[in-house]
Length: 133
Image (cartoon, rainbow, N blue to C red; front, side, top):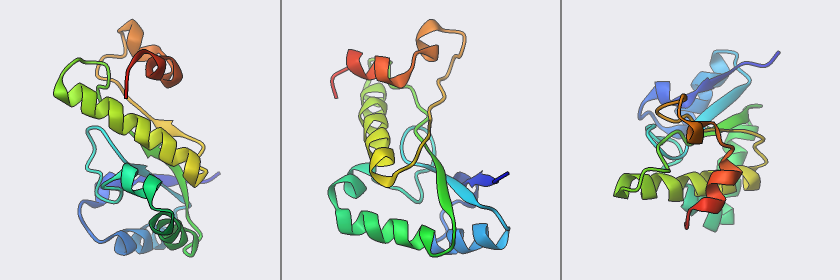
């Protein structure tokens, strides 16, 4: 069994310090928030990592050299509400899923505010086709 931690709990410490701390705890992986409601302290711009291969590779190298892996990218938010926040969450959720693919991350977490609503249970692929990014 592998254990990982959501890096939001580390606040705004430097990226490399967070990775060293995770390694010192004996954990195997990290879940990093890249959009939505989370702090996005270690991935402040998924779009920047998508566009800049050198930055993306340096980012991955820092994680890999500690023997860690990204277990998931977190993009919890409210991408379906038709407000400026909803449109921003929709755009950045799309960026997070795109970045996950480029990084080889197999999972994205996306929690909605009300799991009892029908749209909250839809797969993101269905939702993404219904919105313009």
